[in-house]
Amino acid sequence: MEKIVVLTGAGMSAESGIQTFRDAGGLWEKYRVEDVATPEAYARNPRLVTEFYNCRRKQLLDVQPCRGHELLAELEGEYDVHIVTQNVDNLHERAGSRNVLHLHGELTKVTSSREPNNPHYIKQLNEDEYEVEIGDLAADGTQLRPFIVWFGESVPMIEDAIRLAQDADVFVVIGTSLNVYPAAGLLNYVPRHIPIYLIDPNEVMWHDPSRLVHINKGASEGVAELIRLLKKRNL
Ligand code: APR
Image 1 (cartoon, helix red, strand yellow):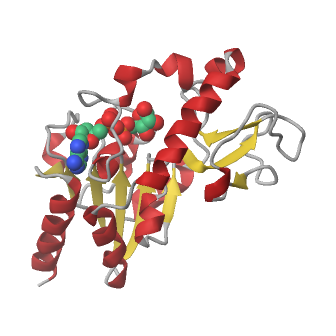
Image 2 (cartoon, helix red, strand yellow; image 1 turned 90 degrees about the horizontal axis):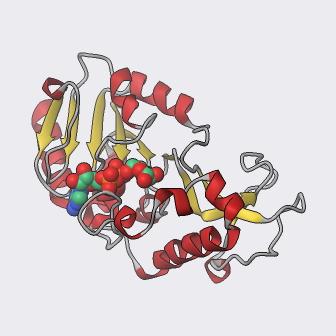
């Protein structure tokens, strides 16, 4: 079975109603990264950061996977599909994708604020626990923090993601501005002879555009187009 590796970003969830970060009206127009998405922000004002992620987590209760999420899950019938996502929502999983690697953490999980990557302290929240309060403690007695990789923190899953990129028979990029590293750097690990399809309704700056087959569409229409191209390729 051919291995398809798919790097997704916020644009993958845009059609589910979750706003992106850097488009007009995006999240970083409303909040400053340094106020809500860095370890320093959390140390300075844990209540504000906890509230910010409570809001984003509770939004998951109001959104559904889009057709693009569903089509990627259906692709597992014919290909060995691995999703490497920068997104912290659970929409790929809810659409049925089984191999999902979260580079930047997961909204539905919380952890120790002293050892955030210690698996003993990472806790999956049930839907009726999506509100974390100051005073809710992890198993090590520290304040429960979001299981999110903040700017400036290490990306523990990047080595696994690099191996996937190196082994891909087809690499797909959906809905990311390729602004944030090391995630964006994954494209540099894709062997030169392997096609990279980029699904995005807008132009995306990349240092080597000749490497990209740009499907200039949104995630749902774009994945449908990708499937048509893959079928032609395998004929
Ligand atoms: N379908 C596909 N792509 C879309 C759609 C859509 N309907 N709408 C917008 N896009 C594209 C935009 O053109 C843009 O290229 O999605 C991309 C969104 O880019 P960003 O907002 O920068 O999001 P992302 O690349 O995922 O950000 C990376 O930055 O803030 C951090 O940790 C956060 O994971 C995030 C990382």
